[in-house]
Image (cartoon, rainbow, N blue to C red):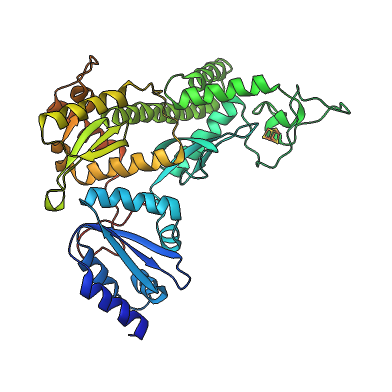
Length: 397
Ligand code: SF4
């Protein structure tokens, strides 16, 4: 072991405790290389120094000039802290090694002439809306192709020059669509003045409504085409359209299911903390809206109720469109409860806690329903390639 690594190891041995927390490895210029979390920080950190050459942990340690850690109240608190650190610093080893390949999202870009695409991860801070997560990238690619064709949205690269019909032209001229989709009526051809801005955005709104589970316009168009194909005795084509319609219906059912999970992820969740540092989290639609010390006195309980009421009084669209960080936080929280279903016992449906008039189920019923929807909507634990010694799952990054 080289002297630098030996110094890091003796620092960990001398000071780290076996408590939940988040640790960070820094490179020669103080740059953050890796963020991790564990229920037992000391054990976890020591395991890095036992890693074999070529393993990720070995690589991290061999590049590190400094290691730091901070304790958190619980594993859940560590998970959230780690997630936020990864999001704000994008450490090299987290970014390189943690890509969630199991899920994909649909991205509706916020370009002047938006596009609908499949992406692996939400990203790019506020420049798009995201729908999902979904399983099966290939199926979702088919779905996107179908929605794009049915609603005649463009799917060309972002740098393709656009020329909308209401754009003022110094030298008006007649253009041909730049690709076959425009020539075969599968795109409105905003590249060749085939539509106005408003016409194109009306189609984008339909795509958004479909993905929010509020409209089935693409399905209606498909069914009309199926009927037409059958009337023309084009049975093969009609069967193809039927398969496509089935895929779209499945996606819509999935969206409705996701919506249910999201609604049920409106909870007040109290987490037992290390040394009595219990914390209460208020979640609305899968996102953490407040974290407070767990109330103990009647006054503290009333203050929490008031806080929950305020959070739920704020209007919020029911839509599924999420900003990147929201989608990732939702996944993190959903996966937490999926992997730790016993933690649902420490939750109370938030509308119940807020004493609102909104109809709500009995807590036990709501928890059971949430466990069922999580089972279906969030994939179970992946088989970790490099299982951590203390059984803590790898960070979601
Ligand atoms: S027709 Fe034009 S706008 Fe439509 S996909 Fe092709 S290049 Fe893009």
